Length: 85
Figure 1 (cartoon, one colour):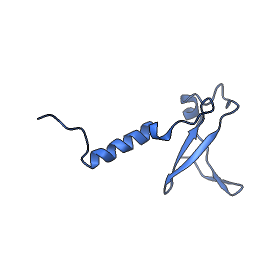
Figure 2 (tube, helix red, strand yellow):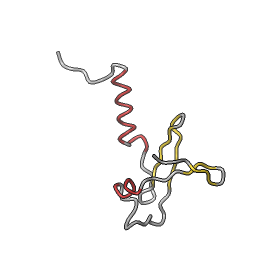
Figure 3 (tube, rainbow, N blue to C red):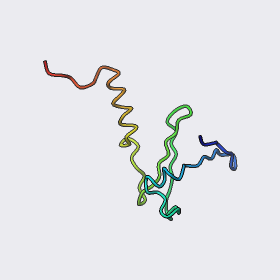
Figure 4 (cartoon, rainbow, N blue to C red):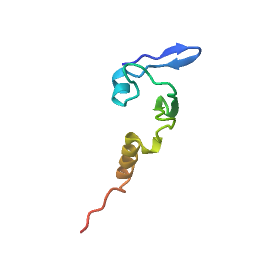
């Protein structure tokens, strides 16, 4: 589990190297130049961290987790796929 640290009044947390390597953010243990990060608050104690790829941030609405949550909400509300009778 990661720990939240204080740095100049902001909270700081690290992203495990294994995740950065899996997403090809880190190359040979180094973070390439020009990589920017966006942190968006999703709700109470929930945040999305997006890392730029070739200058563009991944669209949050197209992420697997957001799509899964939207599908679950539709299913829970009874708007899931219909079967033919």
